[in-house]
Image 1 (cartoon, rainbow, N blue to C red):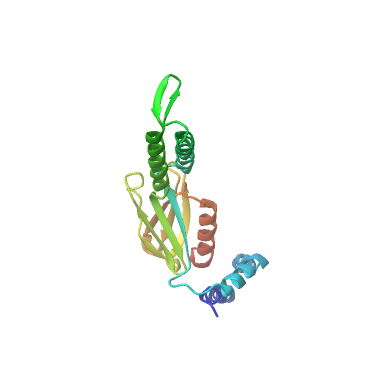
Image 2 (spheres, rainbow, N blue to C red; image 1 turned 135 degrees about the horizontal axis):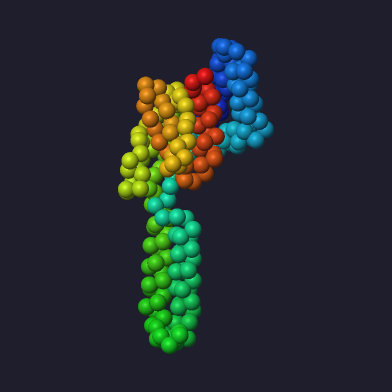
Length: 209
């Protein structure tokens, strides 16, 4: 049995245990709804697919991040720079010098500059100002640069999670843990709805009632 299946089964067993200990019918209904989502055909298919996947070292994980530069800027810049480099290379074989709008350009120099900018924009697309990683045991976050340096980051085990609160003034999600610990995540991270749904599920399992 693969790690993915065993972790999925352990989670279902944990939900069953909490359902048997639930203080009222409303709590049992919430847990039953969560169990239904985890045993849906789509999730079962995903579990079967993971069973067939060769085992990999380390835990399965999800990563969410806030790009240092907006994705539209890096993608657009990369496409434009690559197009300029390609134009210069294609036309450079015909004549190394071209006049555009009264300006004279060396097409080989233009190709080199365009290629350099394309590489630079690609590199920028991999830089993150904030990242948070989820795995089977908990989550861990880190900050790079000034944009989110004021946020509370670190590690949190899932069993310590208690409640969530979206802070509208700066669009930050507060994740409250046991012992008044605070964990903050920018709401502008990629795939935020997926992140929020996962955290809602963890709060339903371990949080305050």
